[in-house]
Every structure is written in structure tokens, then in C-alpha cells.
Image 1 (cartoon, rainbow, N blue to C red):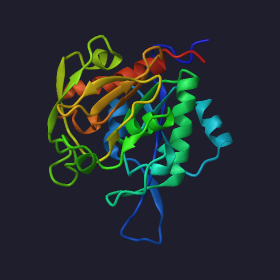
Image 2: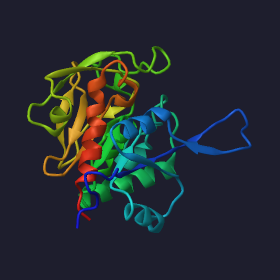
Image 3: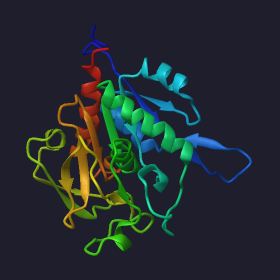
Image 4: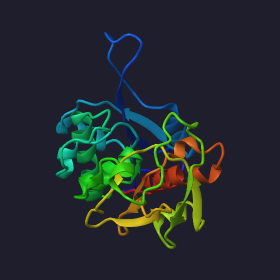
Length: 251
């Protein structure tokens, strides 16, 4: 039986992150408004998933949602991908978030649940499927261009170009040979996981888009499309791709 009719707005489960506020005695979790507004603009209903949940609770959530969004955030613990000693530049590691998002990524793949993974989510997707990361792209790769414009330029700053693979799901969401993207990361994919296909690359060769070809919608991008919709409206196509796949999902 179809999970959603054309008139129904699918539920998109969006993971969250722990926040530091002006009052450290009040712990909080949240998600940047741009993700929420992008899902809504694409026709979906965002449902925020708190951290700290066990698998039984996550199973209950997956029984209700039609798709999953893994947003950006802090670095992934290198122990998750057999990394070397922690690089000095690592920041914002949250082992509980790593655990939850890796489980969600693997489960979404196994159950054909539509998945959109953004920046950190793109990296989590690769690691969850058995890939590895550069802990710091700029210092660990000789030919790397600058990728970390975090707090240097506005989040919608178009930092560089990426080339898309013709015929890919990503190219179907953004029907162009190349797109200009923002760049707010210092980690990146080192070894691509088995079963994933690279569908976008930066001028220095860094993988900026990944997907599973035979999945209804399992796609990751290294940039932040949610921050670009105002300057590059075509970026909403990534969220529409997720929401449309979620609307058409059978469960």
C-alpha cells in the first residue's frame, strides 16, 4: 500500500545536534532553520529527531516517517572509520550523534527509505557504508584547494564549482553539467564506500556528491544547498527529490 497520496505531504525525519547557548546550564538540541524551511518549501513536513534515542525508539520513528535528512554539523570520530590519531583540527565530535546517524543511514539504505545527506551527513553516509575520510583535507592532501570557508564568508557564498555525472540522480535534481556551491567543511571523502557512486567532484578531485544507483533516493552532497536557495533556486531540487521519493514510497 502506498504510504502517501499525491495530496499528502510526506514526513521527513531530520536529525538534530546539541547546542551551546548563552546559558550552559540549559542543554539544548536543534536544527538550523534553513533545513526546516527547505523541506517545507519542497512540500514535506520536517520532523525533528532528538539525539540520545535507542534503536527501539528509532524504529518507532522510522515506522512513521517517509524519508530521512542527515544535516551538517561537527566532525565524525575517526575511530568510526579506522582513522589515525585524531588530527589537531577536529572539532565538535559527538559519539552519540555518530551512532544514531550511522544507524539511520544504514537502515535507510537497507529498507529503501529516501535519504538526503548534507555536508557532515554526506560524510556519515560514506562512513556508515564502509568508506573513510580525510580528517583535514587541506593539510592531508597535497593538491587540495580551500574548502573551509566557515565563518570567513557568508554561508551562501559560492566558493567553487563542482562537476556532475550525467544521468545520475543528482544530475536529475540539478540538471546542469556544473554548479557553483558553497564550501563549509574541512573533512571530506578519502575512500569511497562499496556500493556508493561518486556523482560530483570539485576541481581538486574531492568527491562532493555520492549516491546509490539502484536505491529510490539515497544521495549525499558535500555542500549546503539549504543555504543557497536564495541565490541558486535550483538547489531546492535536492529537497524536492527527497520529498517526491518519500511521497512515492511504499511501506
